[in-house]
Length: 378
Image (cartoon, rainbow, N blue to C red; front, side, top):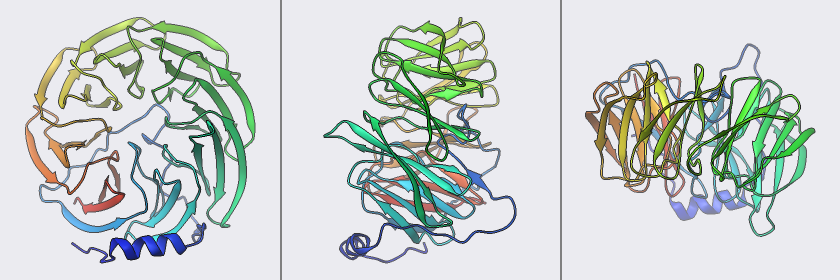
């Protein structure tokens, strides 16, 4: 592996002395952008590619702090990643080298959002129960907006056009422009442990009272409330005319987004925190007991189910030949999406954290303590 041989103490000295600054060169032409967690506002974790069986490690780099269960985003060849020590990093995907970082005193729980030449992220101040929405222009290399928000933000941001939406842990849903102007705020009632999703006109948010709320993205009005049986703890995903989610009791739900009726319910047996993912009319879900299951999107009928013996709380990535599952038991599992056969396992020195992302011919993974690794996949 083309590993960057920098010792941890030296790396920490370098990181500690570096300035809080990101500036990259602008180019003409339409850029390749992965704008948010799950790629689009309805959340999509399927990439229609076939990976080689023997992945080739290309580079590895260690940053300052540990990861939450977020992911990278990217702009052209530049990767953006947050960590729990209050930093947003920009790395070159070809080399893995850090081209810049933004340093803060709080914690950044959620994936940075890319909007044109801006990176948008939220710093949470845990002791004061406030957050700061920050917008930074990485072409000009300067901050352009900072807004204080009441409460911590621990779930993922949605970008829809030139607008962003996010919800605080205590249930305040905000709408901002992508340059930091606030439009409205709505109290949805109850705590929120689930990342929202949107179909482009309606945003769906679940609260701790077992309620799924349909909210007009234009004005913040609540259009409907759908009852579930327990606190929704997974992120939400929209697949066609259905919205899929998992709860703390281990049930996976599918609701019709038009009439709010339950399509089906599937019992996984243990709490679900990862976002359900979909490909080729199958829904794939993982739970904290280490189970992986595939169910039919239309009927909820089980296609296959396996027990891994691990602890699965990060969102998988699915390709044409692999379901790629991060495991807190220090490994990445490569599962056949057709029958659940374990095809390959990458053993790691620490707990897998990030939801995997593919950029070009690279698979990007992340694990404790703040290690990012890239594999060539074809």
